[in-house]
Amino acid sequence: MGKLQGCVSGLRRPWQSSHALLLLPVLLIVVITVADLRAPEDIHLGPALVIAPALTPSFAGPRSTALVGALAVVAQLLIAVLHGGLTTANHIVQIVTLVLLSVIVVVYSAVRDRRRAQLAQVRTVAEAAQHVLMWPLPEHIGPLRIASLYLAAEDEAQIGGDLYAATRCDGEVRVLIGDVRGKGLSAIGEAALLLGAFRESAHRHITLPDLATALEQSVQRYAEDLEPREEAAERFATALLVEIPDEDLVTRMTSSGHPPPLLLSPGHAVTVPSLHPSPPLGVHGAGGIERTLDVFSFEPGDTLLLYTDGVVEARDAQGRFYPLAERVAQWTDASPEALMFRIRRDLLAHAGGHLGDDAALIALHRTSAVHHPHHHGVLGRGSARS
Image 1 (tube, rainbow, N blue to C red):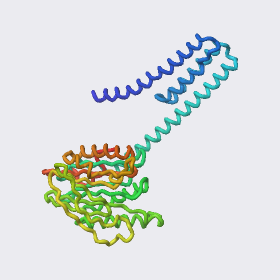
Image 2: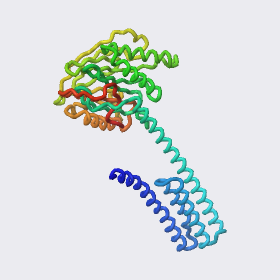
Image 3: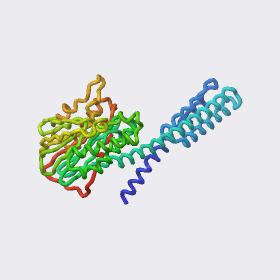
Image 4: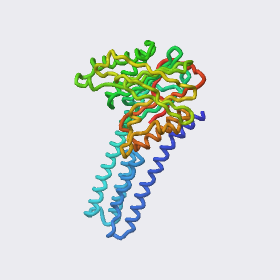
C-alpha cells in the first residue's frame, strides 16, 4: 500500500508542478495588462503580451500554450477597447501579430511533443533490442565476479558493433568479446550474428580454436548469403575468446585480430598476457588458418580486463589515445563495479564526453570461491551503462 501511494504521489508531482508554473504566464498577462491601462496613451505595453505564450512551451504542452495565447489575445482586446479604441490601426496590428505568433508557438509545441513521443518510442525499441541481443551479465559466474561497460558511439543509441557474452561449460567459463567493423544498423546485425553463433557453438566445441573456426564459418556464410558482393570484403570482426576453468589457474585464450586483455594484480601491477592473434573473422583467405591457443596464469585476487579498440583509440583534444593500461594501474585493487565506474568517467573526460567509436569492457575478478549460478547458458551485455 505504501508503494502504491508513493507511485501516485510521484505521478502527481509533475502534474502539480506544470500547473503551478502556468500561473507565471497568467500573472504576466495580468501585470502587463494593468500596466498598459495605467500608462499614458502614447506608451504601448501590449506587445509584451507575446512573452506569455512564448514562455509556456518550456513547461507545458500545446493545449496549455493555446490557452495562454487565447488569454493574451483577450487581454490585448481589453487594452484596445479601454485604451484608444478597438479600431485603431496600432491596436489592430498588435492583435493580428499576437494571434499569429501564438498560433506559431502552439504549432511548434505540438511538433516538439510529437518528436519527443517518437524519440521515446525509438528508445523503447533500442532497449528491447539491447535485451534481446545483449543479455545482462550476472554479478557472479563460476569463480568470477563480473562487471561490464558499453558506450555506443551513435547518439541516442544503446548498442552498436561491439559485443560480449559469457557462458558456463562443464566446470569452466567461456567469454567472448568482439568488435564488428563499422557502426549503425549494419554493425548491429553482424554483432547479432556473432552472438548467436557463440551461443550455439560454445558448448559444442572442445577447444577455443575450434570455436573460433565455427565463428569464422558463420561470418563467411553471412557475407556470402546476405551481404552485397561489393561489400563482402569490407565486413569483418575482431574477437577474443577466453576460457577460465574453475579449478585450474591456467587460463586459455584465442584472438582473431583482437587486442590483448590486461591482467590487473593487487598492488598496482598491470601486465599484458602474451597473445598471438589470427586474422579477424570474415577476412578472405582466413578460412582454414591455424589458430594459436595462448595460456597465462590468472590467480585469485587478480582482475582480467577485456576491452575493444574503441577504448584505447579514444582521443583527447590534442589527438592523444586513451592510455588504458596507465590509468587502470591506479585502480588494480578496486572491485569490478568500481573499476568500470572509474574507467567510464575517466574515458569520457579524456574524449570530451563523446566517443568516435563504440567501446566495451568486461572486468573479470577471480575469487577463491566457485559460484554456481542457478541458470546456465549464455549471458551478455552487463551492469554499467552510458
